[in-house]
Image 1 (cartoon, rainbow, N blue to C red):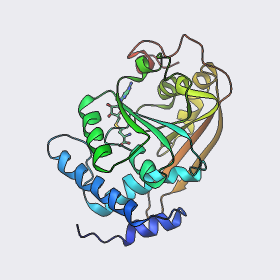
Image 2 (tube, protein in one colour):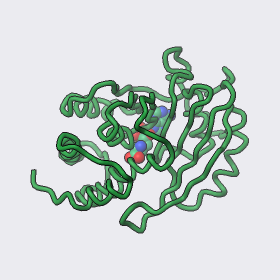
Image 3 (cartoon, rainbow, N blue to C red):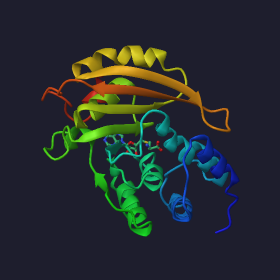
Image 4 (tube, protein in one colour):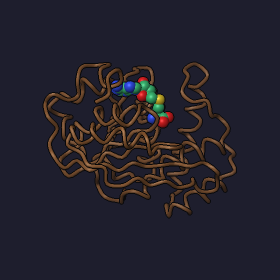
Length: 239
Ligand code: SAH
């Protein structure tokens, strides 16, 4: 492995995150596994190391702008795909307890390999659809934070995510581009699910011209048993 780590180091420094040798090594192994698996499974269109650093690693870790991740929080990454943002978060903040969830089992099998190879603990990769897992006793209203990147529009995503969050916990959505309209349209759904939009934060990713937004939603009330509705309905007929 010979990589120029300067871009990664700069990005981490701008987010005020420091990495040990082990953490750099884990991230590089993850990068190599991702590239290898990408040949047989469509995981990401981005393969160039520096681009992966900016658009996947630093982007995933920019969540630190929204919440103190040095605490022992229990986090769900819903629709994690190839492990974003969950794997970089776990590498950077090993005390987090993380569940990675995706409806595509091939991605989950890949992530189980990643977990083993990187020797990560207090992390699980779970195969399933949000609409079904959210009804299970062990997962419903159990998480301090649910995060999700590039999965669905904010109304549908709120129905997937908010049921998993404990009362007083957070649902934080990674969004891009113009989101004012999307946020307005999601207000009703968020309210019906027991949430309240607390903050919309827009910023440029360190060292790039890429704009990233976070929508921070606090769960103030328990979610009615009505939600989430059956598989497919949240995207077909958003609340
Ligand atoms: N978060 C990753 C992947 C985004 S692609 C990233 O930012 O790179 C969206 C992923 O969400 C896919 O892997 C898809 O299988 C998963 N997904 C979509 N709907 C889902 C649902 N209802 N429940 C669980 N996973 C879902």
